[in-house]
Length: 85
Image 1 (cartoon, one colour):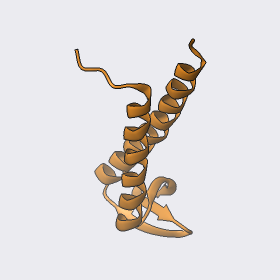
Image 2 (cartoon, one colour):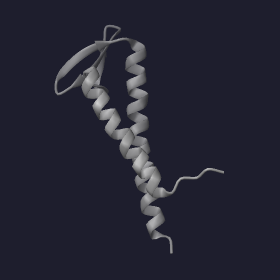
Image 3 (cartoon, one colour):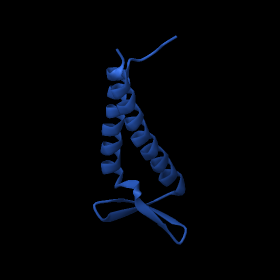
Image 4 (cartoon, one colour):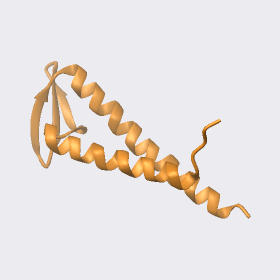
């Protein structure tokens, strides 16, 4: 069975975070900084909003939540592995 070490998980999570940040910058924002108004979907970055399709908005939201959740789990796993004797 293929297993990654806690450090490898952390590296994967950081790379995913960097890719997310780059993608958010290139497409004009992310879903958590955006909003939905009158059935239209907007992603935002630094107070500027870009209208996107519902599918792109949901995809950004899922990726964003997975990115931050993955960072937290990788950090916790890394920290936990250091505490074990």
